[in-house]
Image 1: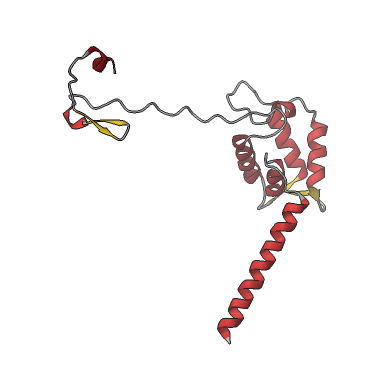
Image 2: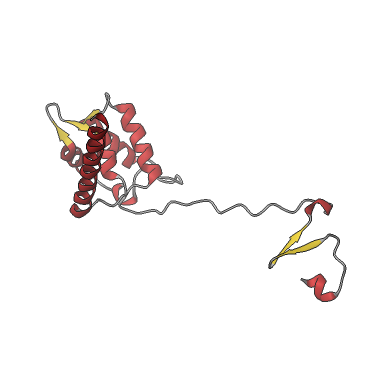
Length: 165
C-alpha cells in the first residue's frame, strides 16, 4: 500500500482476484515468511475439579496400582495421600488446588464412597469418570436419548423383518 501511495514500482507482479491482491511468489527472491504459529492451547484450571492432564495422570497411576479394573480402597486412599503430599512447584500439579490440603481421612472417606465388597474394592475407571469435568446429563436428556435409541432399534427390526419376508 505504501509503495502504491508513493508511486514506487513493486519488485513483483500483483494481480487482483476479486478484492484480494495476489502476489506471484515465483518471482520473489525469498519465499514469504510463514504465518505465525497459533498460540498453545492452555487448559483452564479449576481449584476444585481435575483438568484433563491431571485426570489422565491419575488414571494411569490407578491402572498401574490396580488388579484389572479394581483397586483396594486402602491403596486408592494411600495413592491420593501421596499425590497430595507431593511437591506442587511443578507446572502441572497432580491434584486440583483444593484437594492438596485435605487430610488423609478425607481420602479414606472418598475411597469408601466408591468401595464395595469385602475387602473394599473400587472400580477405578468409574472413579476417574466421575471426576471428569463434564456436565452430567439431565433426566430429560437421558430420557430423550433412550427414546431415540428405542425408535432406531424398532426401525431396524422392522427393516430386517421386511427383508426376511
